Image (cartoon, rainbow, N blue to C red; front, top):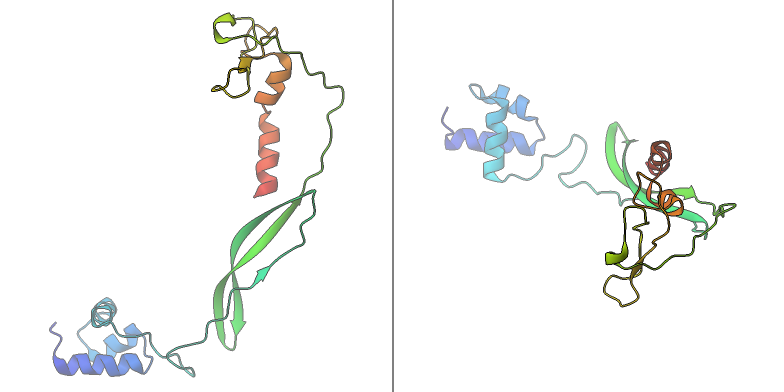
Length: 177
């Protein structure tokens, strides 16, 4: 199908009147909806006029809801797509929502922090805790060095810090999502 000047002018006229690509294809005959869309794109035609509206519609600004922040609260911003009705048209808009999760500090009971033996790298054995303490680039860097169980590189205290049960990770992930 060839796009003659006459057919292009008719396409421009129908497009500016707000007809859909399918309706334009039917009126032109011998051309598909996709061919109409492609030609409109190549001609860089502006957006179609909506029925009962103008070619440029006023966009509503994004609404953001904010919640007060308290010291024991963690907050994250999530973008959600919502639909709302304006006249006879359903509009989709993205809004930012602050999700707030209360985080309460609970000091652990009966926590005994072991006194570090302050071992250097060359002093570590299979039975010593290999938990690094401090900045490796500083002179006071050392490893915990306390007694560790058979199958672990860490002492009992540092195991609790390093390993988190799967159920706890899932609960934490679900609270954030």
